[in-house]
Length: 549
Image 1: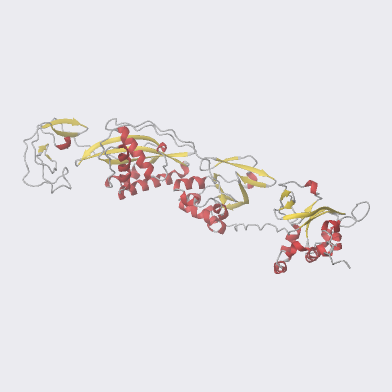
Image 2: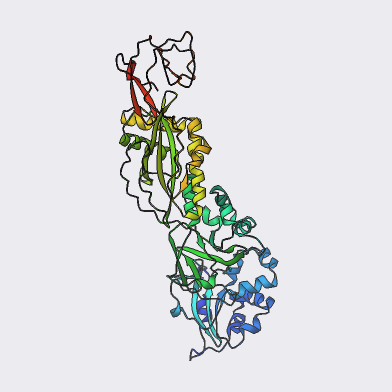
């Protein structure tokens, strides 16, 4: 007796379903084929009976059915199948059925036919033929009298639709706040100070990325953005006006609030904005419409702005360099600072201030963004030389959001002046050039002062410089006298404990200079310039050649 061998192989599904009649013409409809193969399709047949679909798939059709085997259904937990409602079960089964007869030779990679469930399947490969990347066709083109059957090894699950927000009388921001899957977008809008804008009258069309879209960005992307970069990205998702999905067309280029265009493509019923797919269209708000998208849109990188020519010290009231006008892609903010201890020439001062502004302002990442620079005034008061400089900054964005940009610049400059970081930035820039550093006095650069001098796309208003009343005639010097005690006046405020140098009276005003050096004799000469009497010790210059006002 020969030793027992392995059991004979079980017939394959393909062999079992091969036509038996000599003409190869089908004699059974789709349900009859499934009923005749109980070992292969008993689970499918039972579910078709539960969903009352036997009569439908026995009809004239034609239909194309991707038929899961018993082994395919066995991959699903039995409790899961039993828990399905009749509606859910019907939806799953119809997701395996196409209207019309689609043979294997009709399949192509990327083909997305619509099922009777209403959603599409995707042919992801032909080697082997695969549906939705998971279900392999074991046997194709099993012909029936009312269509064709393709046997698959995995049950296809229809996509779960993302619930649309309930329509209500909410503006765009309120709508997003009430929608769980837009919470990251809401946080970004708050961080960019765009809540008031997007809550305004509009109307706006917002392409709203989901939480998953933001999560797909490289790690740390959002945290690394400064506010201006965040504003640029968010406003690239906003189109002025209200555009429903029916208003969109293939190839449409829509101008965004950020300034660049987004491109609309429509193919096979799918609407895309650049590379992002619209998953939920036409969510209406009181001030526009929201289209939910699955990818964050990133605006194209801007071209660098050419550096302007240097400003110059041109007198007591110079005209600042022409300010480039605001464009659709950028906004020009004009402002000014008051500096002290300026001893360098205009070109060097411009370089130092620009470097300090880049270090201080979050919206300025390059000196090329400072498109104008000039000295408005240079004056001396209380023995401190102050110089007012005007500058213009170009930031990405549009005039609609210009006030927010300007407010940020004013706040950042005043904060930096008050805590000393602006002076530190000036010191660092000057040290790099090996020259004495100017400073930014806190008192002269408070929020209100800078805010009053800041404007959008216009000439900044220089801070008023109170002129010293001019005498009607050249005064005669009075005899010099030495004070008997340390005297504090406008010229020596803050230095009462320091010894005083010889002083003189001109026009009834005491003029003196605090000094830690020994007293010296002043033989003054008189010079008239800019409504200021300047006394210069021409006989014995004070240390460092100091000038007394």
